[in-house]
Length: 298
Figure 1 (cartoon, helix red, strand yellow):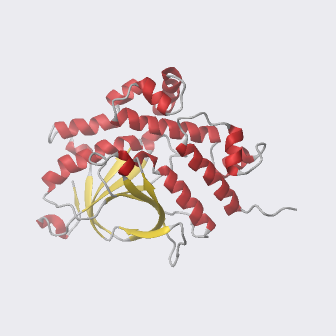
Figure 2 (cartoon, one colour):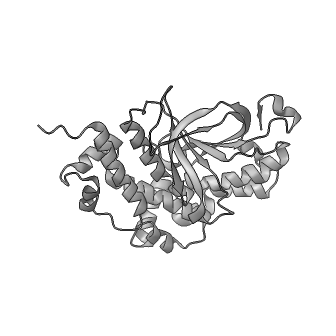
């Protein structure tokens, strides 16, 4: 009996598949080619994948392609046909059908009516609608994590998360209830996408010491403005614009000399895009306002 394949070995093999998918979303993805990437039998590997990840490989590919498409729709002026091809769909019609089924709006309506539009409207209208977006100012305890560096578009940081989780499982550092967090070092409005740097990681168990290629890092440990975002990750760019362009400049607080970071509170494998929850943490200089002695909700 061959016992060479352990749980972590399967995780490692399948993480290569998800990394390959992230890198080739615009191309045709053949099951036999993915089996070669996994170094597993083409007759069985996708059953192992579904058992471990809770969704079929087809569902993963569709979810990642549509998530990337939502980013293009929310944050660029690319035509729907161009977006479809950049996301691996042969034409705008097939992309539109899949997108509408997942997001409840056609690509055109999503671009015109999605949550990113609401944030931008609030930013333009000044005080109107501010109550819809709550910012909680509080002291955030330090969180010790292990992670993987990512270079390139922030919407593609999921690849680093996949690698980080697999490596943590292989090093016996994975635990239920781990926190999934990422830190973003540059403003995507100011730096070309190819030069953007970020780091994705998961919280370490007490006493856990990660080994390469995992790198330890710490987030929190100070006062932050925390904005709870609900909806597709693509709409978070507009949320940032509102947080910086509306809330910060009116709050009396000063941003600290530390990068912004995010925490992802539920799993996109299990939730429809409109129910995804994320917290955006903007580090603050304590003492920048008289209100900084205690938590405040805006």
